[in-house]
Image 1 (tube, rainbow, N blue to C red):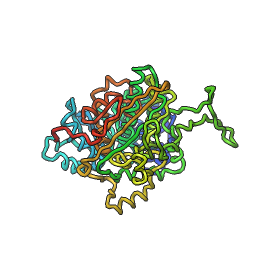
Image 2 (image 1 turned 45 degrees about the vertical axis):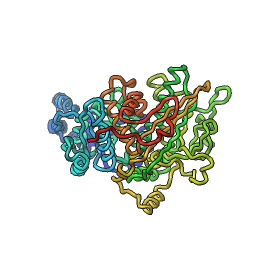
Image 3 (image 1 turned 120 degrees about the vertical axis):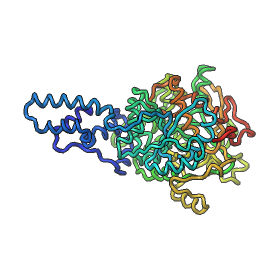
Image 4 (image 1 turned 30 degrees about the horizontal axis):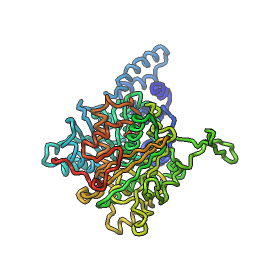
Length: 563
């Protein structure tokens, strides 16, 4: 495709150019015009545009000669010469200044608060307890900012001179060098839907490099889904939302489905995740507020797409008692669509209600509108790639765990779960769906309370030392068999770093044991039980079959030694 495109460029007086940096373009892309377009190659389009090709002198000379030669035989000879030059051009070696060093994990965008979180997890866990030795490097648009943070966190240690690279989406060569330097890239530069991260992902896919980020943005995931099949073909794992939001509820559902399938040969029919927490409350970081603001300003089409409970796939249609699908018929057009089951509707997530079966009160939770989409996509992918869905008729819901009925009037139940697992704790995430507090109102409230953080900053982990977040899951099979599992970790910011880094470790060290070949995948689908095992090894509390008791609802300690 690119070769034909290049020849067409040579025949035109004005070659096509790639427009970059247009916010309007990215707002258009958030709705997902490329969904279903498997030929979507954003970096390829940039790299093979005439503007870039003309920087390669051998190709530029051939293109200039094609405009002047008259004889058909001579033109064919020039085209053959050009084709030979394009082999080197396609390798990307001609413009690369890569030094040949390949790091296990390369962190991009680590000059701000999310960079601080990644470095904190490295210091407190990975460099102390990781079972395998590993190499890492940092990168960002502005090297000096990354250097300042690296020295702040690692000064006086053997890691204070950790390699730092520069990369900017405006410079394709810097993207190439960055990807060549990594086995896995963790991108923490959000809001993702306003950046050009699809260029980085496409380059990773082309080179078979793995990628993780900590997004909580449905529009962003939708934008990169067209690269799924190409990533799978190239063996590249693209794992957006490797964070608390997008991680724990899906991992718990995956484990419960595995247990019931292996022990009873049954699929899940229902699953619920209850989020809660305690200790110091983590307010929203500047980056989290920026992400929520970007989604709120995405326009009607974006909001409509985000309000679809199956925006990321996994649709289960409503059926009557005879097994026939219920349908909606659009007035005036006659367009027929299968009907959404009422049990899957987002309206269920926004109510304060009692779970009479478990004897719990529940209410709205800020990431319910995101995590429900992730679990539904994983259910679909487990069916498509592994032949073992969580449940073909699965209904998954997520709520904040509320106090007992007698305490509701005292606590203001409508606010959802508090503590470390409450709103704003999923660093880099934005909520992802309907509901939630108005961003401007939240900013005003935080400023009035003296808890507002500018973009690139957030609460110090030292102020969250007693904070903990928990995810308590319950499920039931078609026959009524039940099981539970639960996770308890530190504050949501630290746990986001845990999920991201341990996902990357899986992709580096457990790649040969992973069950899927690659693709654009949630962390649970990509890494499965290997990820859970690594997080437990790093200190996360976990219990299968029952929930962790009240005595375990506290932050797990850091490893004995800290860098």
